Length: 213
Image: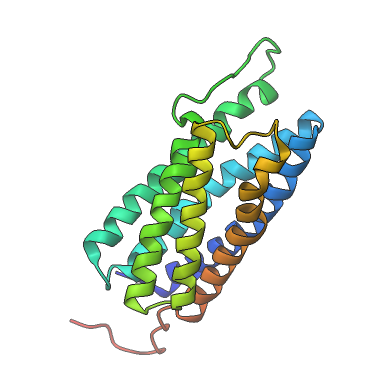
């Protein structure tokens, strides 16, 4: 059952996710250009927190969009959770050599999320599904659904680019799609979504209203 408190919590988390995603993109630009270890650590910390916030937003969206199609909304919830956990685990793995007191610790891969299968590929599929639910149901602005379509397609393209090695930090020009998503699509989508979740939150029950049977 939807509650006003969780609607507001989901809206706040979505706004924080959008702002945090923009900071993450800025830090990524510094990491690609070559930066001190602490900048990389901060960048990964934002990815870690972003994964956690995404789980909240995914649940809030499920509660809102299940009225349109509960089965599809549940599918998006499960995929979104997997994608969020993928980002969380990826960041945790990559933080090991930075935070470990043992300088010999080296992490060269993230077995739980190879090449961003979860945080790019599956996250993109989730956004496309959410876009369909939003555009079809009309419970949120349809333009928000179209933005989700675009963001999801962009994430899937980024994953394919990493898989076939035509999107790589070694070639800066190939990073245009990640930068478009990180600097524009992600912040715009989640801040907009957060505002909508806050604006259309379940009304608080009037003071003194008797509880139902």
